[in-house]
Image (cartoon, rainbow, N blue to C red; front, top):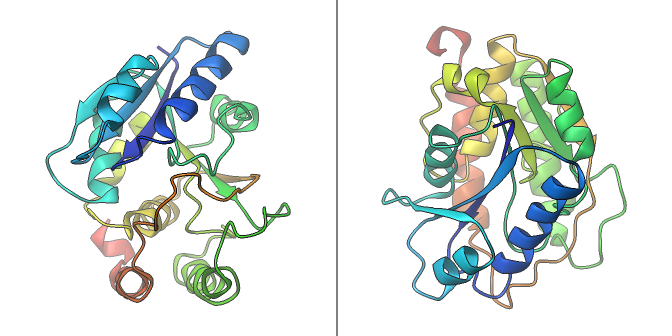
Length: 229
């Protein structure tokens, strides 16, 4: 199988089926041998049932956390390549052509850039858009000697074999920074793709904890060194 489209899920019953169907349609329209894999991370609503009914393969990850769910999903993915994204309708799962093409052309990792295109109004808070993400991404670029513009974009892709060699460990949101940092320090080829970013449609607050998660990202940036890879 060439491609796994991976979605971490925690109480996303209002949006997960829409995202699964959109991703499945992309595979059919693009004539790609692939699967849609949803990794549930302890949902207490109807997320698992709705993802299954929409046609996804669903696995349950007992270790809580965004990073834990994604690592578990990549480890159990059937595809040579894995494209991952949040199942809250904030990312376009029907526009993944550039991601897969970069991977086919030899990239080890492809990161979306939400700042390269106009965002939907309300898609990102003022604090995250103008302070948190830009500053932490700047620190990441300086620390890891990479030109990745948006360290926190949730739509990203990896060559599964290349990712597994990185031995990422983080279980929380800082996993997004860790995988880029380890790939850059290891000399892997990283490409970037402009992505449209929309307001999530879950109808509830985000799982993000601004200060807590920001501090974890910062600690990771300061602690990760080439000799740790």
